[in-house]
Amino acid sequence: MSLHHHAKKRGLIAASAAFAAVAALILSGCSTTTDTPSATESAGAVPTDVSAAVAAAYEGTSGPLPTESPEVSAGHDVWIVSAYQMVPGLAYLAEQLSAATDTLGWESEICDGQNNANSGWANCVRQGVAAGADSIVLLSVDCAPVKQALAEAKAAGVAIAGISSFDCDDPSQGASEAMFDTEVQYGDGIDGVADFFEKSGRLRADYIIEQTGGNAKVLHVAFEGVAIGDYLSKGFEEELAAKCPDCEIVNTVSITPADIAQMRQKFETGLLQAEDANAIVVDLGFMLAGGIQQSIVSNNAADGRVVLGGECTQDEIGYLHDGDGIQACIAISNGRAAWSLADQLNRFFNGQEAVKDGIGWTLLDAESPNLPPAGENYDGPLDYRAGYSTLWGVE
Image: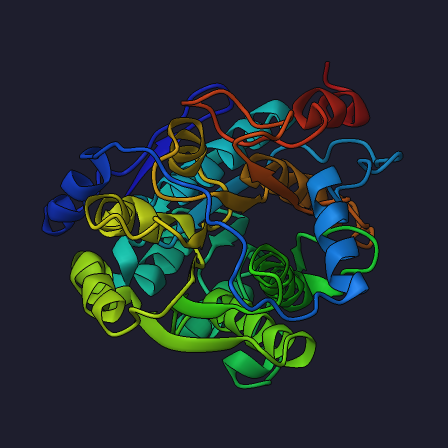
């Protein structure tokens, strides 16, 4: 289902009642103080390149916005397909993409794929085609599950784009013909969405290696069966094995999209099976907000352990301020990604190639000077809204 809106008006589909239990978990909370783990008792070596990567991440790796832009291509209607609007990070991503299209003078619409219940993702794509949209943007919806619907959209002349979504030519999606017309390009040294999240996974391993002195025993909470989670895990596991011979993953809690309502239970079972873990790594923020953070706090699981969160969602920023359950997270600006995608779409409509948009990451902890206030989203080191507005000539 979807709700239409025009240039200065935004709408959003109400989430399915079937997921109300998850919302209750997200809205509830516990509080305690998280102790920083002491130095490990038998530390191994920390490679210099690992320490250098962590130091660079604390400084932040994002680059500048593009410096040139074509004129705004007028009269477009963008259909935004969100994987699941109950996930706060996705809701913010959709909101910011809608705001960017408003700034460009385009119409836009958000369709909640509701975690693909009853083929919700493909249904959203087909609704966009039926409504006459000239472009469809997938938010954390990969190509393979909606391949037929995308083929129908392309046959109707609809442009396809993605944010944190993997095209059909990616090995995780079957390595078939590409379907996307444009997507976020990230910063220098990043070769597409797979490389971005794999390298983010490697940075996650680097942080854990350094924090445990090269002696990590990790309880890894991974998002499985979705490409973004698979690439994060790939980078994390490979880097840990390559850079830290005295490190190991003592248990992996695999969370699939179907497990969202049972995340806390699955985590607690995994925690019991990993009593010797000195580090907990939770790959994505929605898993913490969906019950895992509450479990970490109520079970005092952060005591004597390093706990690394996800992409620094609004909830995770609050946890850092309150000392509740995590010591750090690796921030990605969803807002900047949304505005960057709008810029890439405008270039596509003008017949131009996509350009590097400078998106990177920043490692945040409670002492970081660039930690946003509690209750705010991480937006990154520059005012991308003003920057893109100026670039587009629509100030």
